[in-house]
Length: 227
Image (cartoon, rainbow, N blue to C red):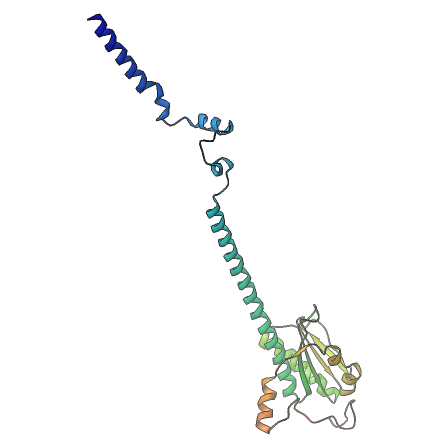
């Protein structure tokens, strides 16, 4: 009887030890102990978890997302730049139309933005008298302020070559001899010439021609006494 009890106690003790001793195997370790295991270099966790780095697929997703955002931002900036450029060009063409309505000659609009950093467009026209020059300047200034909300950055006079400076658009109004003498069009020969729809429409209606409203200045390229 004692032997059987002894054997039963041994089996009980063995079973009890088997189910109680390895309790840490199924109970989660305290957070401090897990942290200690990480600090001790435990290899029971993945290397990515130990290093704190995101898994490779996640990194790729993040990179693709950043690339899409960068592309979208670049496209938005480009769209804004294009819209601004179109508006500035329209303003330059509008000034040329004002000069044409004032009977100025040889109207040219040049896109000089790729060549210089201080402006984007030149508007050039020739006049044959001081009253005409003053009229072109005054009407350009009025149209710029009333129709476009633009104010000139300089105070033009009445010399044979005057300009209106609007920053991104500079209008040159001069006599034919001054224009020929300084020949700024040749200096900016690489600039792209902007089409002027009102001249093209007139040329089509007249069967060709264009380039200004009036005929060549009488009596040379200086001031005309007839106007």
